[in-house]
Length: 429
Image 1 (tube, rainbow, N blue to C red):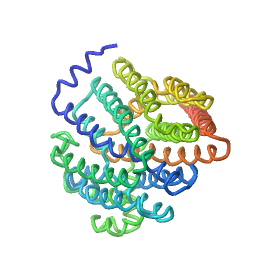
Image 2 (spheres, rainbow, N blue to C red):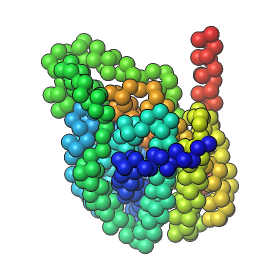
Image 3 (cartoon, rainbow, N blue to C red):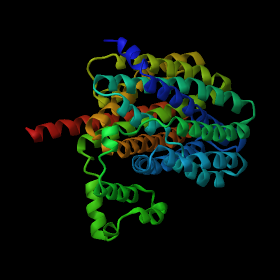
Image 4 (cartoon, one colour):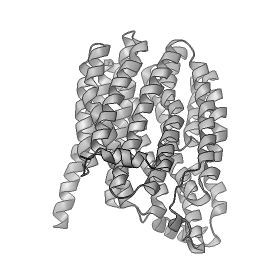
């Protein structure tokens, strides 16, 4: 292991600034999950299944929006691509806490659709600023800063929510996210290397415009169609463009996306399980303690993984994290839960870092923004499944059901993936 890689990477000014800006920009939405859950449970007097459903609706919006937003970064540049997010974040999250649950659902969906794409932008820019062995360290650092964010955000959100200020807290999330977006536009980190940015021909630009159409959410298809060249507007031409635009999507990339979905499911289910376990026991204010233990373990795991000379397959890391999540369901108090979170926490950052690195290795730079968008969609699709899955078991069997359900589901997904890998290898022979 070579921990000096971190010092060398952080000595690069643009990388250091990007990681800092990304960390600050992620804090508001890291608090939003706890705030929204407790707002629905405590203020709107709904159950954890309802809170999980709201989280699922929001993350479905994010999953639909991420590829489109990622492609917009590729085609029109970062600053122009962020304008819808900067405007919508303040408006939507200022309205959400003042409406009933029925109106909250479509609002959080639109909020997810237009959310600030900070995760994909940071990963895409790191893929430009770092290469070779540095890339693994860079993605590990990104995962580590994300865990630091999740030590701060959920704890702050829990304190605000349990003090009875969920309305104010959700409004602050929107305003501060918009400010973070403005700062990101000012900083404007690179999303393509100079040689790649200068190579686009007219044909490549037309293909990129068609990609906006094929990747856009359904209700934006009509408006996005204005970007497509005339020959792409026919059905046959559009099918050809779609096949060309997704040439980067191979079975190996699909396997990484499946791992991302599984990781999102386990992490979101654990998130809801922690909140439910402590709220049910009357220890809402201790939520921050468990999150600090969980995320600190992830930081340690990320540091170790980033210093390794060889990558570990994402599927193996996910299998370990899912299996080690199950014992959290048998914790009986705050400190037992906190210590039980350490082992699965150690694998959180390595799973995400390994999967991000794999996508960057498998997809060419000129399509990496779209690929990272789909990677984010897979991750958030898993989140959309994990939150309500855990919520249903929590309402039916108690807080322990949340941890056990997503842990077992993650293990089954990994075993299915390992079986498919073995069959593919035998077929290749």
